[in-house]
Amino acid sequence: MNAIAMIEDGRKDFDFLHGEWTVAHRRLKRRGAGCQEWIEFTGAVSCRGLMGGVCNVDENHMTERGFAGVTFRCFDVARRSWSIYWVNAMEGLMGEAVHGRFEDGVGRFYGDDLDDGRPVKVVFIWLVEGPDEAHWSQAFSYDNGRSWEENWTMAFTRIPCRG
Image 1 (cartoon, rainbow, N blue to C red):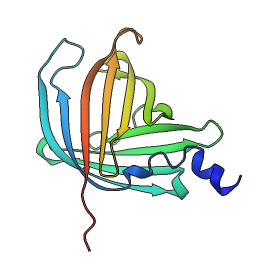
Image 2: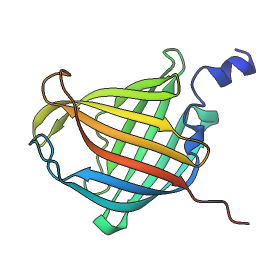
Image 3: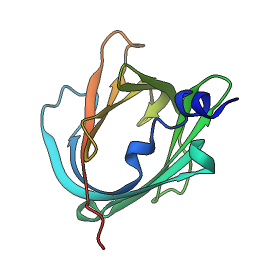
């Protein structure tokens, strides 16, 4: 594979996220219950690429909530698709993956999971809003994808490099 094809195959899609970020979180107070009340808090994320862009990892700290976690992403070169895994620091277990890719500047990643024992469809949406801003959201579907409830958003702002 030539160098240009390697860059354009999708493995560089998350390069925008490398670095240090502050994050404004909005999380629905109760999911799957028609709740309209949001909890807002701040956090910090540090992301770095691995293996030439085929993988990346970020560490999330939500100090106000006493919470932390790690996101691990890996790129399937043959399928040109990403798998995204979350590890919650309280449990230390890797959750079910979501899978997808960026198309027309929007990353969409779908999977299946459980929400308090209830089966749900999950979607992550990534929007890159410039070199120093990005937006992530998560939504669940309790009816096999017919309707979606957004339950968590993260607005990323890059921390400028020092030195």
